[in-house]
Figure 1: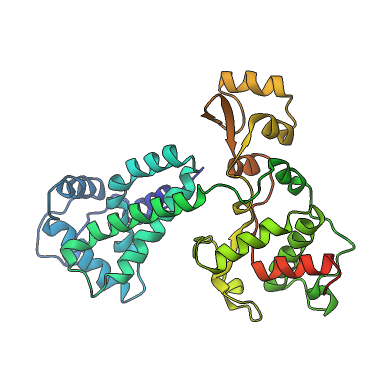
Figure 2: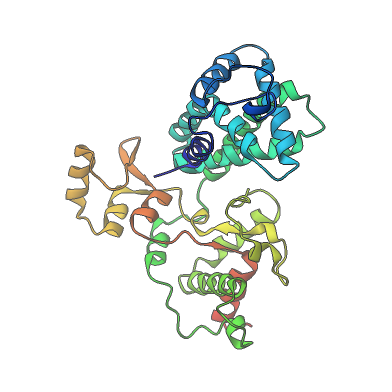
Length: 329
């Protein structure tokens, strides 16, 4: 599966091709220097110079071109800079994934998001020669912080609470507020509201609303990082009537971080004995991790394998749905 690193590589390779790369003007045809490397050699030189204690003039030139192109809403040189930084992030992304038992794709997305945020924030506050290192440090530290937040102990004590949520969200008797008011459900914002309210009704139905409300309190107090800007949509952020547009969260955040192998096997429709055989053979659909004497499966990976949507919902919508289900709204 393609991750954020792969997407940047694909973008840069497509744009650069085999043409000469000019880090002086951005256009080899108008540059006074006679010879220019192709992109492969250019990147090799950049990575080699990155090992020095301080960044070379090559990196300063990349930063300068990135700023110039940004002014025209052209992000090509920023992406070239990002692709040259990836070797400094790749090893750390694997390390965080192994230590925190997270999906590699999520860790790398967090890194890229943080590096781009550092780029924007450093426009005037960081000297050009320090910008690449600033981006790397921000990417790694942010990825660690989010990993620790994701790796928190689950607010749901009983892993069986996860099982009902594998069922389809079909609650025909739920009178969600958006339906009552006759709003067009084809609207993206309304669809998000309905989805959140249906989850709220489901949480109420399975008697785990208290832990959900406790989780919501953590979100509203800033103790949970949320899904990040890469996951939110303009319709989410533009909605009126919700408190704190940044409070959206993945539904998997409420579930246990890991479930036991028997539970995972049941969700996937695999006999428990067959599940252990497949683990030993390395063919179990979700590669488990060993914790003490037991195998555990990452919940998010399990949801992906079982085609259980990891929806993004808002606390207000979830609580409204629970209130309707309980007859108090």
